[in-house]
Structure formats: C-alpha cells, structure tokens
Image (cartoon, rainbow, N blue to C red; front, top):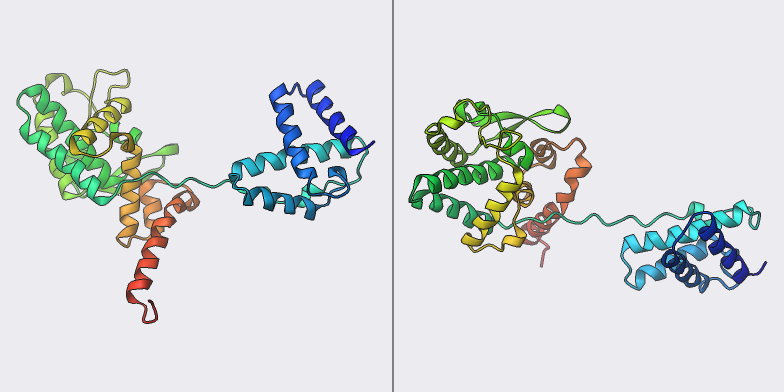
Length: 304
C-alpha cells in the first residue's frame, strides 16, 4: 500500500471507528501531509530524526507549543495505526518528546498600582457619607488590605472566621485546600482596617451571631467571592487602575511577586500561598530572574 493509500486508510479508520468529524479529519490530513514533506520516502517510512526535524520546522514557523503537541499527536495516531495494521514493526514517535506546553505567567500588578488601589479604598472609607456607604467602604478596605497582606485565596478570604480579627495579632492560621493549615501575616495597615471594620460590624444586629468576619445573607453565610470581585473592579476604576486587569487572584499574585522582588525566599512564598508543591510556586521565578539580572548589572565588577 502506497503512502497516499495508507493515509486514506487511516482517515477512514478515524471516521468509521472513532467517529471523527469532518473538521477533525481535515486537520489530521493537513498535519500528516505537512509532516510527509520532510520524509523522502513518504511519511510511513519516517524515522525519529525525520519527525524531530519536522517538529523543529513547525516551531520555527511560529506555532505555539500546544499546536506543536497537537500536530505530533496526529502523527502518533498515524503510526499507531500502521503498527496495529502490521504495516510497520515499530513506532518512531515513541522516542520523540512531546513539546511541553508553556505555562502562562500569572497576571499581576505593579507596586504603584496596588498602592493606588489601597489608598483609594482608605479614601472611600473616610469619605463615606451615610451608614450604608460606610459599611460597604469599610468592608472593602478591610478585604483588600487583608488580601494584599496575606496572599489568601479569595475563597479563604471571604470565609475567614471572626476570631481572626478579634485576636488582633500579627499572624493567624488559615485552613486552606485539603484542610491544610498554614500561618499567614497581617500588616499593621491590615490590622487597622480590620479594627475599623469590626467597629462598624458590631453596629449591625444581623451580624451579631455570625461566625464569619465578613457575614452576608448569602446561602454560605459569608460574603460571596463574586460580590467581592465586582466591588474590587469598581474600586480599581475609581483608583485609575484598569479594572479588566484587576481581580482577587491578581492581587494574590501581586502579593507573591512583590515579596520575591523584595528578597523573599521562594520556599517561604510557597508556604504563605499554601502551595503543596513548590513547582506551582515556580511560576513566579520570572520575578526572581529579573531581580537577579538587575543585581548583577548593578553590582558585578565586570558588568557593563
């Protein structure tokens, strides 16, 4: 069976046995014909080096690693078919590494942007003209100060127990994913914002019996994270920070990035964020890399 016939037989199998759609079949055809251009005797006779050369060319053409991996998957399926059908006694793709998908860098905020956000939250609290506005402004101020001071997950933040603030201590223990506990810090500004919030909170009888620091009439009994996220975007707009780039998760990333920029150890940041594996925290190493380059350029005697 010639190369073209083998390709058609493979596509027929994908359609009949796997139920592949017309679009999927066309994508397979394009990828396999593309790979075939790098093998003189046809794709069915390719070896591992032929496949690697093709992948190198795919990368050089600017395809993302996810696209490279998808194209290689099509070729793997083709050779698996040839092996099962007895048209080849080996699979050359078995020793070809799959292009690793790039892990996107976390979205974060600069220190100046965070400062504007926090200052605006404090201003809104001070300028509130009625009880309802004062309640909302004090709560939001306490939320953003606490989030930036601790790097909590938004679900952890909105469900904090009241006892966290009643103790008025520099550290508290939070229960995170999997029920694991970790210690996180509270800055002086966060503690002051929480004291202000407690004073306002105590004035509302409906909050009296709630075990949550940020109670609400929601099903959970505490402030929904969606409400906080919406209020945070409103605060960003008032602070002159692009609202589309601000979320509770972005503030958590800012907490970690700013710690590393100012000399914190990666392992310590891992513990503060509650990551079970340090490889999760290593998405922030780009911050360390930038800092190290800056240190070398400024202080190494042979630096330009």
